Length: 334
Image 1 (spheres, rainbow, N blue to C red):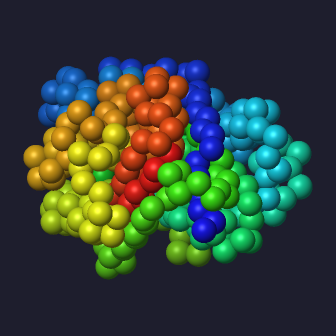
Image 2: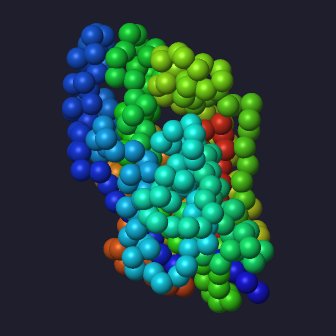
C-alpha cells in the first residue's frame, strides 16, 4: 500500500537577535507609560530570552527559498508539487509559492496554504492525501514566518499592551520538509485529525489590508484575547491525543517525541499539568526559539533530527493548537 514518509527536513533562523530587554525598551520608548508593568515581565511570563527578527528587505519568499534550496541540493528526487504553508505571506497576489518557485528554478505546480499556526500541519495532511492517491510522488512543503512585521510597537493604552503581548514572544524562522511516496509501512503518516471552532474567529486577528479594512493601517497589527482562548484550550488539550491513540493503537510509551506548538511558558506548564504527556518526551525549545507560529513544528523536528534525538523508525507526534480553537495532530513513524 502506498504511504507517505518525511525524507528530509531543513531549517534556519535570521541573523538579527533581539533580547526581551530590548523589546521592553522599545515599548517604553513608544511614548506610552510602561511604569505600571514590572521590568522583565516579557521574559518572566514567556520564558523567551531572545528572539530573531528578519531585516526590512527579507520576506517570506526570500528565506523560505533558502530552506527549499537546502533540500533540493541534497536530494535527487524530482519535486512534483511545491506548497508554501504559513500565516505570513509576501503579497496578497500572487501566491508566495509562485515567488519561491522563481527563486528555486522549480517547474512544478505550486500553491499556498494559510491556516494560522496550523498551516504546516494542514499542508502535511494535504500532501499525504495527494501522495497516497497517486497524484504526486514528491512534495516539498516550506514555511517562513515573519510575525515581527505585524508587531504593534507604538502603544496608547494598557489594552493595546495586553492585546499585543503574545506577539512579543514570537520569532521569525523558516523550515522545509520533503515528503515522498513509499511502500515501507514502517515509515508513514499513521493518523491525522483536525478540528476548528469558527465561532472564536475574532480571538486572534490581523484584520487589515483586505475586504473588511482595506485602507485602515491600524488594523495591520496583531491582536489577541489569550485569556478567552486559554479556557477553551484547557478543555480540548487531551482530545486529539485520545483520538490518535485509539486509531493507531499506539501507547505513550511507544512515542519517542511529541512536537507540540509552544506559545508561552504559562500555556506550556498548564498543558503539562492537564495532559498525560511525560515531560521527557516533549521537544521543548520555547526558551531557545520562542513562538515561531506555523514554523515551530518543522523547526523543532528538524532540530531534533540534527541533534540525533530521533532516528529512522521512531514514532513521533505533531500537534498544534492554533487561533480560533483550531487543532491538528499527526501520528508519524519516521
